[in-house]
Length: 352
Ligand code: AN7
Image 1: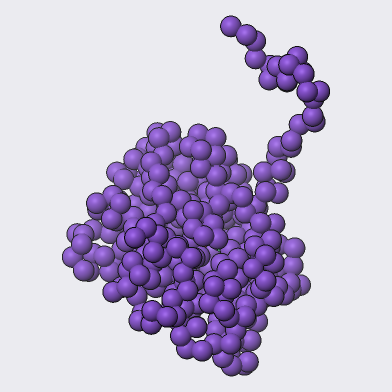
Image 2: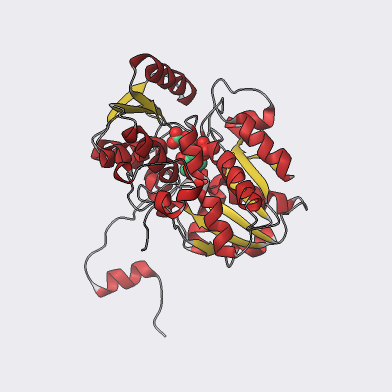
């Protein structure tokens, strides 16, 4: 059956969930698209794992199906999460599916428009705080601890990590072998932790002899793992990864160390340039944060230390999530009269 969801597809690898508690919207089985043009720029055979093709248009759905199904199975009355946007959108959808009330705590005015709209559409309760993601996460943890029967569905919930590791299985299955390197953005650091866990389990089960170098990239203005200390006021155009104190820092650092990879930073300019390249040269539209992996690969190649062989970059969320970033650099042109002359004139192409 097509798109049966990651729980049914990878059941033996995941925590036990009774059939009647499975809350799925057909997440997973996302495209692995060969990057025909950007491959040249990074000097490797590059593939894009387009996680924007999940039901709520980000990778969060893989972990959310597991976390929400388990919350339902254990009789939670509500769930809560802190979010830069995508976790909130995913939690809102999966809570609706599971029939659980959903509260999301977000930094006021700092989540992308599409994500806020998703939360509202699914009927979750949104609490905007006068503080950043890191404050929202602390508060959400406390709410879950003190209110009782309220499940925290951030990636500090191990069910989230379990579900997200299924992306590593899909990559290895699609290529026949794990890639030589995997590049991805790092914010709260749950995803890099998940991929590394997935690739290690895949190798451990005898499906492969190797695991990829894990190449994590943070936005320069929100790069605590590179700087070695928390950022009090993280800032970046990539709002999804505007995080100053990653909850899964240990997981991220050990993924980089054990795999022989790295965690470095890229500038907002490099991120936006990579987002534009993906859209204009590959036809793949991802949100700014999702382009950090490509920005990083291009940067490494430019410095003569590019990744080699087969490389996968994870595009974590869809570009439609954040229309404002695009409208900040290109606007719709004014209309023209509905005549041939006016339309041809606007096209600035002569007949031949
Ligand atoms: C598009 O939604 O943290 O390193 O609250 O939305 O696992 O945190 C989002 C993170 C990358 C970073 N790309 O992943 C949230 C949130 C996109 C994201 C990340 C996020 P992690």
